[in-house]
Image 1 (cartoon, helix red, strand yellow):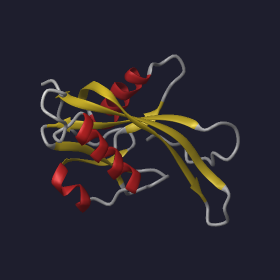
Image 2: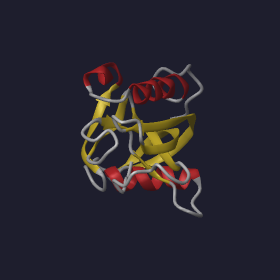
Image 3: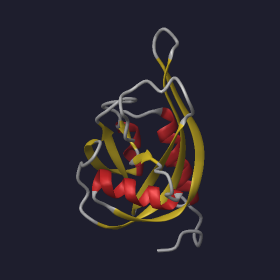
Length: 156
């Protein structure tokens, strides 16, 4: 997710939109190049712009960070990402709205705020250093819209 690197301790939380992108049993991951969670694997995500719908934000952010075009499948969940400094002061506060999406086209590459990208097999997600809430989103998406969804719930 894009970040200015400036403390977010005043004002309102920023709205972030992310996507669990499926290509078969593989999920698209990005290695973050900026705080928070710098150098960890995450989902393609970014800030919603004024006048932009959530679905438009998902498709734009995934494409900007990875070069991949997606079809949005549905909402997974909404989480608060609140990060504090060691002294307890607020550094970042994002309200993140995560969606499931299906790969449509494009060759994944690191662009925008991504240091690297990977198509990770669902059964290897534990091999990637990532926030525990990111893992939860991936697994929830797998059960609702991805490879673990009951037959007939996911269209090809």
